[in-house]
Image (cartoon, rainbow over all chains, first blue to last red; front, side, top):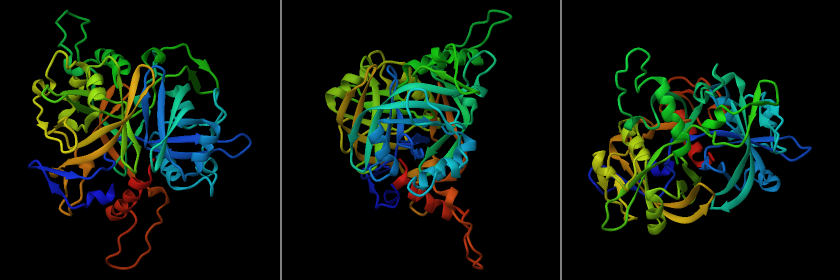
Length: 229
Length: 229
């Protein structure tokens, strides 16, 4: 990646520069993956090569270098928990991406609380807004990284992000994204899924809510979570 | 996902709510994937179930529903181009996620420019800051979605994001992220990979650059792009 940034460019189309293959798909999620063997101190590894790979059933993937301490634990146990990262957790997230569980107890060092899981033995991280308990269904050796493909067995959310209508407002939790070596807050909201094809609402007198109200946006959002991907 | 938001909660740990499995890993990338058969109009599909799955070699994955128009094209040709999305492209991105290539010519409708590729036959999108030409190496049928695992064959970047030191500044391109049904700009920068363990620089007189300068951060960033994941 970084070597690539300084690689001698080869000009193809005017205004464009062609490079050799590299990792340039950003922004990405950055998540803390917790894992552990029974009776041993649980560990945390930070992963940016992570994502959703199937909606129904809910399947995710994380990729981990073979030499990482967590790699063997996940391979042996076939289980892990994905813990989403928001702003208060970004320092711990960075720390858990740099340090090794061979040397430090990351839960202890970062003052994180092991959260008992319901479907796997590995604990989640109590401070995380969302925990996804996962069971590995396939491992693909790809080179530097092994990809663990895993079924989501259960989801735990922090009730502080439930609104008064009983709806979970994940985007109010201060999620963090990772792009090209840097962590960012989410910034300005640009639209909800489907906004580009929404017709302006007709005037219907009082009580009419235009296409740009949050109600309409929320409707579009619903569709997105079924169809995106 | 959305049904889950209103599902009857089951309280486990105080302050936490447990749900059945669902897609709750966010924020995610949102990319326009272009594809096409020789001699036919190329198509674009917007994908959020996308990510990097291996650093070396550079391998990515995208997941596409079987019934989508692009699914068969990608399966038949074994090729596609991932086009990163920045703010000026967000409307086209949303449109390409809602509309079908069976009904519309998305390049034409969204006034996007097909960019000749060097390693695959499918064109990229000229307006995108980064194009990743990909060749499928494996297809995994997971349920609603098939995951296409693909090797990155080449990368094209827009030279307008090269800085005067010849370094590509992707995070100056206005990238967009997708979270729980909504598109967002990247917001405030929270740190570079490794910042949590950097020691404050010692005073060394004039010319000393502290750990918090962009130079030092950039160094941390380098490491991240090799080790993250």
